[in-house]
View 1 (cartoon, rainbow, N blue to C red):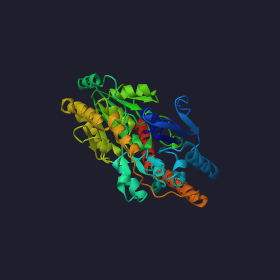
View 2 (view 1 turned 90 degrees about the vertical axis):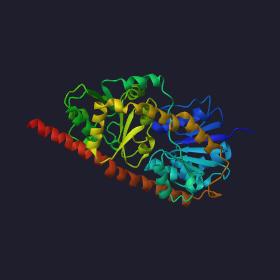
View 3 (view 1 turned 135 degrees about the horizontal axis):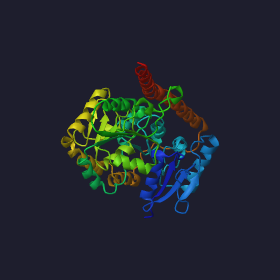
View 4 (view 1 turned 180 degrees about the vertical axis):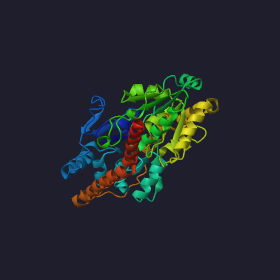
Length: 418
């Protein structure tokens, strides 16, 4: 039989995980399927127009005219067997009007909020939804009243093997000065305020270590903060390294050399930085927040899960690893084994290929004609939902990071005056 005609529809690239995901999908399946790509802007990381059929359609333009144009383009010209929707709001809005013989698979790129809501919108007219964790699946089923939970498939992200990973793991086991890495910068969901508290307390001890704070140094809600960089909260100490924004290759090298990799995030989809650390084997320390991180490690084997509201437990755990490193050396191999079993290319490819090749149509019969009234109602819903998400993130993430960072600086100034 002729190969399946697969169409990837992606939001315009702004770098990061969604950009990488689109390229991995195309690279992985281009030899097996006939692939076309619908995207507005891929200048950040362009596809090769000599290899793939590319259609330029701006997914952020949700006007009625653009919706009608895109429906006709897909139904009458491209006519794919399968569509993979990677965070295209427009595609989710027009899914009810696509031909019934087109299977639609949507990808939820976050635990909740905009990316998850775009994936769940009109899910009754889609055939499968890919969730990045069981917590993400739980959110989608509850939020969009998906009765058949088997429609939502949990497929974790993956990264390729790292060169000389075994040599690097063996070297880590013999390190006399352990390397501690946090790769979240001052992004509020990553809990930088907790990381900085841990680092400040560690620096008050005489222990030998290297603590890498990777990523943006500007404090959360910078315009309202009385300082420009979180590095200003620290005395000069060679043990504390603020890298700022650095090239991806350099960040990967630092992460690969980590003995301890900190991921205490409030919210995660399926964090690529954590997988990149796991593929080289390290001691993962994460929290018990309901996100992918605690699914990704087995407590006491391939990592450690700490109650999120116990900063002293994070600190005491790190100190124990530094003081009794030999007790934790087995975690390096267990972490790598966990990566191989769950987050390497092979399990991801097998699961994705099975979903793409499925001949099951699990969608409600789609509408025979474009209904402008229904379309505008859906558009209004997603607009209001995104406004709600913005407010929710401000209250439950941004302020929870910004306020402690503000007071850290105030306390530092008081101590300086005294």
